[in-house]
Image (cartoon, rainbow, N blue to C red; front, side, top):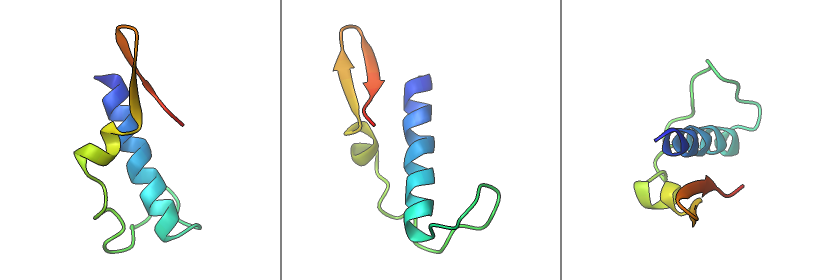
Length: 57
């Protein structure tokens, strides 16, 4: 479960920084910046490795 949480958190951070490279945590995120984040897009960054899921960076 922690790997999913990390993957979603990273997806949100990446999207916010893509929309505004000077964005910092705690600041407002540009409108629409997170619209492209879906379960499928987040899960595509995960891969099965043995019995666990690893985040691909």
